Amino acid sequence: MFESKLKKNYKFELGSTVKDKVTGFEGIATGVASYITGCDQYCIQPPLKDGSFVDSKWFDDNRLELTDKKVLELKLDDDVGACEQAPTK
Image 1 (cartoon, rainbow, N blue to C red):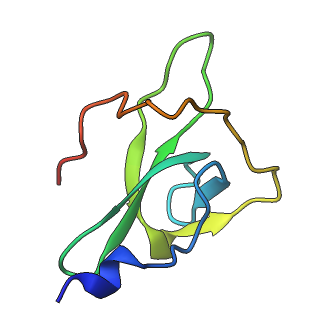
Image 2: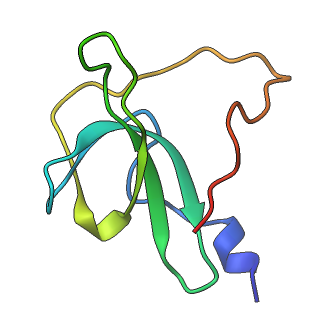
Image 3: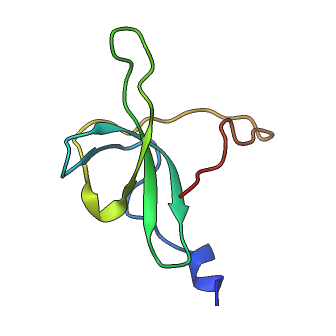
């Protein structure tokens, strides 16, 4: 039943800058979650505002559009794990 979800092709590449079509909220896609209902959501992290962090938000993928900004790439070690608490819905 879940095998097809394991091989899923997602709409956006992590590191892409995306914008919510409804609110205009824009940032880098830093995480993606697939739910049993078929919904995919992306965690969007906006840039700092006045030197302070802005909370990331989760959006359904059909609300997001790709911007023309370059995809962010990070060099990661093999032993890295999650750096934040798992998403909740």
